[in-house]
Length: 104
Image (cartoon, rainbow, N blue to C red; front, top):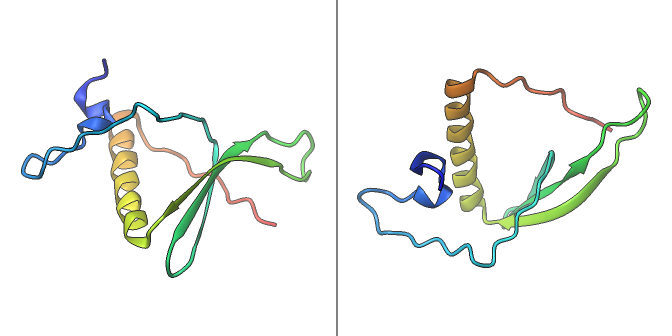
């Protein structure tokens, strides 16, 4: 069993209501690429796997595996949550280097 600080189900507020996380039908998948697009009504996250091209300057192929659709409010909460997770990671293990953006 993981310790509480590493357990996503432990993310309940001390003063708020208890949250029961039902993971009985949860699937897991790995992604090394994420992209996002947004409209007034929703933010869509695309997750997938990219293998580096064999030759410099070659086209990059990304096999998309998951799409998550959020309300803008939920997307902002996710952005704050991810910022906190990355900050905690860097405090424990050191700074992460940002990779350059891939442009068309």
